[in-house]
Length: 227
Image (cartoon, rainbow, N blue to C red; front, side, top):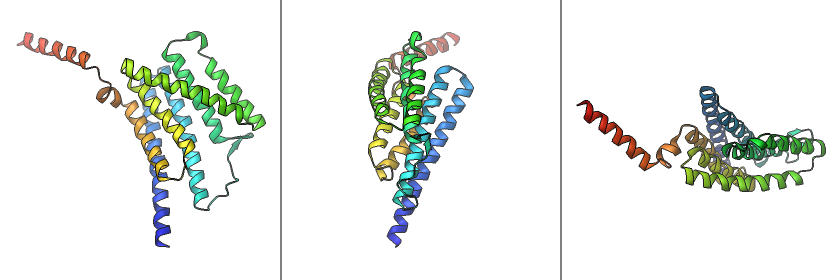
């Protein structure tokens, strides 16, 4: 009985901890958008919201089922489409939009929005998730690869943060959402969003040593001149 209570407490702590971190991360992302008011921050905020809702919904549902507090046949649906699947479609569309915006492909700016609306509407009306899974697969994988390449090539911390987020979203979809590994992914997801929005990846991982050296030389020169 004590072992069961300990395991239950660990699961609740893991789930609540992940939820709190993700909500805090959303708050940081919202504050960043509110401060800058630019489209890229609004797009990433929307992306973070879809990931957060999908992870929290699937995690809470799986934990409740695992603790025998919810029947496995119970789903929260929008029309005929499960909420988790809907958020996944919107997430994939947001990733495509981010790539399009990143490379300034203005002619297709609206394409991800149209695709996301079409697949969401199709799923809500039919309940068929096969085309949705195909759409997510063939958008998320290339988008993740492009983001990793852009992060390394251009020393772009936000791209790296989003790429890591995509990997976390994929992992959380294939592991038991009520497992220790899943809880660790959720915690890392919240931390990763916060680090990406605060520029930690840019400052500590992808900083340009040459550029920083040039800035330091300029300041040294100014200080020497003033003396």
